[in-house]
Amino acid sequence: MAYNVPKLADFSPAGLETAARELLGALEAEASSVGNETEWKVFRDRWMARKNGVLTLLNDLWLKAAPPESKREVGQRVNQLKTRVEGCVEAALKKVQGGAVGSQLLAERVDITLPGIRRPRGAEHPVIKTLNEIVSVFRDLGYSVEQGPVVETDYYNFEALNFPPHHPARDMQDTLFIAGQGAKAQRDRLLLRTHTSPVQIRTMEKMKPPLRIVIPGKVHRNDPPDASHSPMFHQVEGLAVDTNITFADLKGTLDHAMKSLFGSSVKTHFRPSFFPFTEPSAEMMVTCFICGGSGRRGADPCRPCKTTGWIEILGCGMVDPNVFEFVKDNGYDPKKVSGFAFGMGADRIAILKYGVDDIQLFFNGDVRFLEQWR
Ligand code: DAH
Image 1: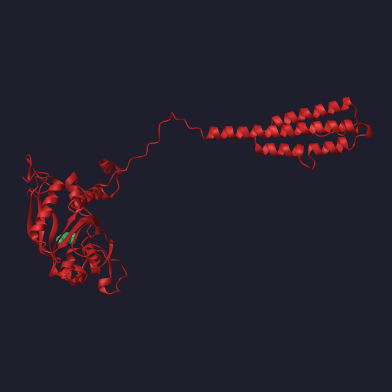
Image 2 (image 1 turned 180 degrees about the vertical axis):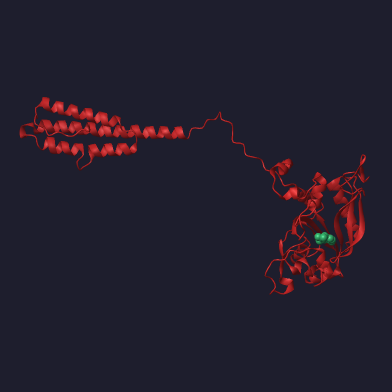
C-alpha cells in the first residue's frame, strides 16, 4: 500500500514521533524500489511536487492543522522530515545514475578473448591484373596512361581513324549501336566503342607531339559469347608519335614489351595485315610461351598455339597520314611527324598467361574462380 499522509489527531511529541517513523519507513521502502530514472522521477514528484507532494501535504495536514501550542514542535518535525526526504530523493537519483553508468559499461563491454571478425580478402581481377602488367611495361618505357569514354561517337571510333562512311572495314567490327540516334549526323551517332583506338584521336586533340601513351580499357562487339568470345572485352592500345619514328622503333618496342611480359626467351614475328588507321599494318606473333614454340607438349599437340608454335597477340602499324590529317591543327602535320600504334586484347593475354580455357569465367562472377588470384 502506498503511503498517504494521514491527518494528525495527536500532536503530542509521542504522536508526532509515531507519525514521523511511519513516514520515514514508507520513504525508505519506496526509495529502495526505485530502479531507473523514470521511476525516480515518479518517486521525486510523489514526495516533493509542489502540488500534492508528500512535503506539501505535511505542511497542509500537519503544520497548518496543528494547534497553536504545538506549532513549534510540529514545525521542527516537518523541517527535519523535509531534509530527510530531500536527502533520500537525492540519494535515490545517485543510485539509479550509478546503476545506469554501470549497465552502459556492461553493454559496451568487449571480450578481448573472442576471435576477431575475419573480413574476406578481395583479389585483383585477373583481367585487371593483366591490364596493369601490360601498362607497367610501357610505363617503364616512358609511356603515360590515357583513357576515354566507352560510349563513343562514330567520329572517334571510325571516321577520324580513316574508316570512310560505308567502308567495308566497318563491318570487320560488329558494332553495338546506341538506339535512337537516327536523327543525328552519322559522325555524331553514339555506339559502344569497338576498340580503344578512338582514344588515339582524343589524346592527339588535347596533347601536342611528341606523344607516347598507352590506353587500357573496355570495348564491346556484337559477338555471341562462347569460350573465346565475349561481347565485352578489354584492350590495351599504344601510340607513339614524334619526328622520325620508324617501323624499326615499332618492332624494337614491341619485342622488348613481349619479352618483359612473357619472358626473355620469346621471339616476335610480324606479318602484313590491314587496318584503316595504319599503313603499313601488321599482326604480331610471339613464340608460344606454353610450348616454347615447338607446337607440342610432350606427346600432345599444343592447344593454345594450335601446334603452330606462334600466338597472334596484337595488331599494329605506322599511323596512317590520313589519321594525322584529323588532328593536323594540333601539331600533327603528317609531313613532319610519324608514329606507330598497336592494340592488343588483354583478356586473350590473360587466358594464355593463366591457362584459362573459357573467357566467360572472367565475367560471370564466380568467386571460386576469381579467388584463385588472391
Ligand atoms: N583497333 C584494332 C582492333 O581492335 C587493333 C589495332 C590494330 C590497334 C592496329 C592499333 C593498330 O592501334 O595500329 O582490331
